[in-house]
Length: 260
Image (cartoon, rainbow, N blue to C red; front, side, top):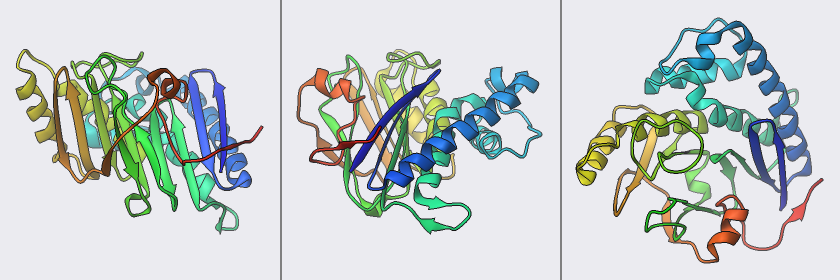
């Protein structure tokens, strides 16, 4: 397995694959779509700043994908930026556009905590819930039967993203990462109020209203809730700080070749 990490401005990305070519194609895809998005937001300020869906006039795939899931989840398009770019990078890892040739059997993109996976090999994903008692003990085993899959997480207590709710972590499993990313924002905004259990239930009930979602896991204080079909839950072993250094991901047992 090849593991490759790079950062560009606000983006912090980890790629894992069995193919060096797939890693290269994913990085090319990242820059191509990021540049396209940067150019678009320069001419459409509402797309950049709105907390609600906005109509777009663009043929760029990243813009269209972000707009589509924003409407599906009733959030601003930028709520899906990390997931959308992860999806497009994953697509580039799997097949080369001009030949439609399969590049990789195993492919993962993690972009700022939003994850897109299409892999024959199983992998473990750790859930980081901050000061919640769950902490890093809970994870999910992603198997071939689960793929392709997008995983998005939103939190009111961790990170720099804006959340209007009070959840420690809302993790969404969906058909792609863009939808999971946008839905995590939408569902996390609903987790609020003095009654913790009631706030979780209200948010879980809303999951069924968004087409394309497979399931959700929500943690707030000492309460958790889940709905839908989730990947197999597992216990993550290891030192908390070591796992955090790996960006809360513990995937593919064994050593990695680091591609530079």
